[in-house]
Length: 439
Image (cartoon, rainbow, N blue to C red; front, side, top):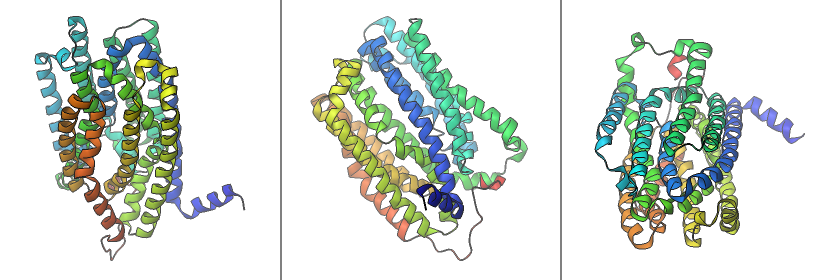
């Protein structure tokens, strides 16, 4: 029997596996296309903007991308958390005119400082607009239909590349680039909401009459953990560029961010499967199918760590000469910085595999609290070390903070979840099917 035939038979006997493979394949397609688009747009933006303006662009735009996929726990605690998130965003807009953004990025040119200020305003506005629109992604994830989200994200990726090309051809400003790029990220999400709410599942269109306070109270119990995790992620993955820019200058962000981005490509297969694996874990765990969960988890660990390790070795061997040829000498990292970022990538791969499982079984409160502690420690260490050893200190601060506060406790929680699950006398209601309470 051929491999395809065996796989087809396996999918027939295990529909959950079929949904994972379908969602994972579409996610891999979307992320692979995004990777290729990034490989095209990276030299365009680096060479067009120059080291300083590119450092500013990547610092703010990376935050825009991060915000575009965040819901700050809202999907798990809709009413209260959306009010808090909007209050946070409106506070940021109120504070914005009174902050010297040029000083934050170590810029003395008044014209460039003004552009930075406008770019930050665009990022905050983008966050407020995208906040409610991103909830549809979680709804589809609950139905194990992440492939739909992936196809619309693919549309946004191509539109983003087109936006960059148009701005470069028109010799547009940094502000124009930020505005057009942010708008294209919203386009796919707007189309996705329209398709789901007006065509595919019109009964999901939000209605005030459908609000149930009992359900809201239940959601609030798990929402805070996700809120803390996403805030910690926002600090960890977006403070690095800002710390480097403020203490060393925006030009020093270029080799750091380029290396970080290339190392992140190593995990494209792993991150592609997460959106489909999460609801599959949740369904199997809720039904008491713990043997399947353990098998799926350790298979994911072997595949994820194996593929990332191979890619990291390749980056260590040829990364610096490839970057020099591809982007120029200003983007080339030191060898020790390359090694440190590759080490962090391996470490974060293992932690992400664990985090996906914990999120699926809703054991994120302690993880969320520890992640906030790690984020604060990371920020403090990054500031202290960047003054002494440059940008290398920023990634070392991240590694040290996570080793000290999160690695061991999170591993223990995962082990207990896998091998000491709750006992269930009666199978739970199946989730991930076409029922409204399954969302």
